[in-house]
Length: 196
Image 1 (cartoon, one colour):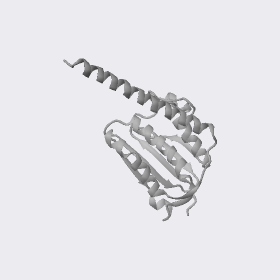
Image 2: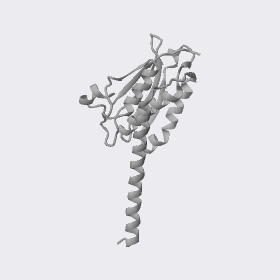
Image 3: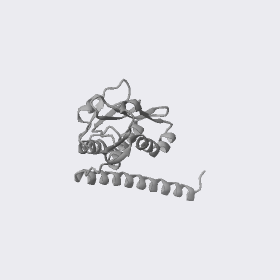
Image 4: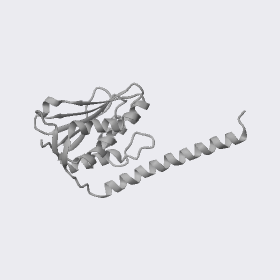
């Protein structure tokens, strides 16, 4: 049997962990609400897309490894005609958007799952960025309202992450959609592209 002091310590530790978890959740909710309350100022910079995508993958590599999920990049280099550098994107704001999509994918993938962050240049010259996973996908009843505020299929989700993503993509002059996929979810962002 555990000593009374050990039982008390276990309870206190559990309570503190719950307080920290709820505080982090509220902090994320407030940050999202504040971000949505202000218009996005797109600060376009010269960005090497390959390095930027690799940095996004590395930012989530530890979490993916802990969850035993494979996170990989997929860049169709030939579609860019040799230059993966652009001055059409805000790397900080777009990172927030992609990070939200990657965190959603990580929240829905189980051990052994796969997530892909990819890019290619479309025939019309625009940039196509995507985050695809092989998780359970988006339920049919949520597809039409997925980018509406406070819609979430995740327990504890705020329903603001995809709204934030949509606003950032729109501020860039782009569009985001849930694309058809055989398995899991695939979010595609079409954005302007200007080679530097």
